[in-house]
Image (cartoon, protein in one colour):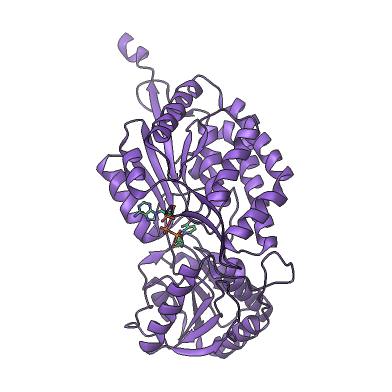
Length: 461
Ligand code: NAP
């Protein structure tokens, strides 16, 4: 049986199944994408920019269809699915507007003569993406690479195949050339074979450490450039002078958005003694106030997790944490449903030898740590294999900026939860991966900085 299935996590019913790609489909896709790369090398980025804007327009027209499908497939609240579509329209328009200028050659002062770097396409890129933002994860890689002239072969997560199909269909329907985004349902072995093909120039993966290690190893074996956007165990540092209203709002967004299934959603609340009880009280009130139900119902604030498998995995992690000495401060009442619902939980007293101390828990589990001061907070934040995002909550912004600079991480938000925007680089350090998506940095991820130097004047001397 194919593992590419659409299962509604609210009912646990299968509503679509897809077969893996055949060898011929894979071969045809690589041929098509490579031929487009060669064709695109003779075309100005401004032509592709106009097409990106058309894709953004079509996505706007199809917002309701796209959003509903994402909610049906992975259970996020319909309002969050709609917001995801809007963010993607923003990314497409950002690269459509800014991309051509960002790809202009860059001049370098040097002793020989005029020198500049052309910013050129490198070839077909494989995008291996996770389910938690079915559209956004794809657009983050597709939009900048489309502008550059790198076609994409997409291997999406096994549990969002219908979203993957719809994304590819919409891109095609917008009038974009055949081969610019090819969705294939692939086994891991098939993916490895594609990466090994000489016409593949690079691999962008967003996902877990497990998936990242495997795909990066294969890319490395074939000397293919890769970017890895992996998991996080983000610290949310609460300082003495945190504004209570700002704190509560950030806490709520941090732990409930996408039901906690966000790579950068704060997973470890690190709180100075004076504010510890307040954070526990706030979090309890936030979790208690949630209303579970159908994610298509706009009054629902606690949707199911993305799958039964995730529910089982998260439940086991919480059991292991408690067996390892953690205390349950609060847990939402048991939910009587056939769906993949998980009752949000607040854990305290997580010591360094606890099995979850250095683990990413992907769902509504709030880990709260008490520290005596800011130095201890920073030390605990940095005592992690991960370094993706983080937050610092303090009324003194200059001071919060100084604390932010001490955290070993890719991103820090002051007085807020995680954020994303087309204009801002996204990515991490340590086991959270390498490379950046979005912003100009994301545009240059798979660009050939081709140096051209005019040596003529030197010859005349
Ligand atoms: P995952 O299991 O690693 O899957 C991500 C993608 O990699 C899927 O397409 C998956 O395919 C594929 N994959 C997994 N193992 C593979 C292997 N051994 N060989 C080839 N392909 C493999 O991650 P996930 O559970 O779907 O997503 C959640 C994780 O993503 C979390 O850790 C989260 O923090 C991270 N994430 C990071 C970012 C970021 O920007 N840093 C953003 C979002 C999510 P299958 O589905 O077929 O297994």
